[in-house]
Image (cartoon, rainbow, N blue to C red; front, top):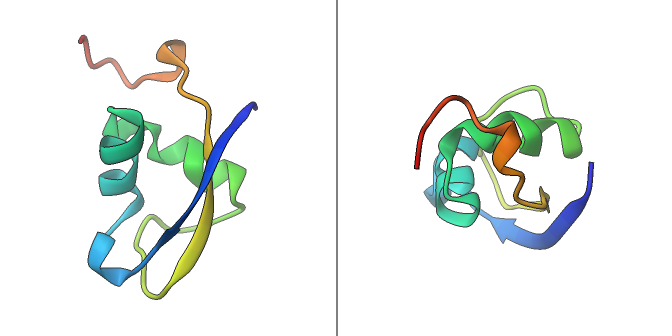
Length: 65
């Protein structure tokens, strides 16, 4: 999986679904963020550094843009 940028997030960012929607334009990309960062949950509970995957339209969850 190609990687994009590295970001710092906090509990105020709520979840990886929110992060995926904000940075990748598609909330369903949260699963790719989880896989890339070896995470087991989508909730953000504390300050965390995440590596984002490069945007890949073919990896969407069926949302047509």
